[in-house]
Length: 254
Image (cartoon, rainbow, N blue to C red):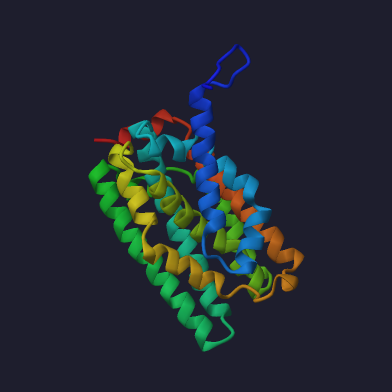
């Protein structure tokens, strides 16, 4: 018995890439999510699979193959998005119905502020003047579309708002932990990104936000499901936009 290769066989590189993607998906499925959080993710699994697909932005980071200018572009765009994501949390704090909900959103706002401090340090190491970018460049369309979506959530229910914000938190935690379990030796300068999002703190923040979702799967409304799915689609579009090598951003790299 042995491996038999013929003209119809799948290239080994493709097999390994697919196995890696499946391993990250399996890790997400095995995560200790509440039944509601797991049910919502199952509705957005296709978008998550696109985000971790071989040859994509995250896959190239994991392999240490992402162009430095493209990563600089991502840092600049993500700084813009984080600012507005935290504004969405601040608006959610206003909509909080109980003191316990206020405490959760207060913690989440602090978590994003901590993330933004790490982001500033990363920008400095990579020679990215994110403040200059935010002041002198129009918003990247995919990021702006995501921001507009977050702003629109305040017109709906509290549960719908939460459902539209959970994917960002859970996605980044899943990307960090999933790829960390595969191994980060080949990441090169991008290892710090995976280490940051694989942290127990990131998982705890995502779990806190998920705790505000309905307790029972039967209570998931169309609004909740649609907002969750749409947010994950916007995450996919955001990563795809960041993967485009737009030469105007390479000037941010020292």
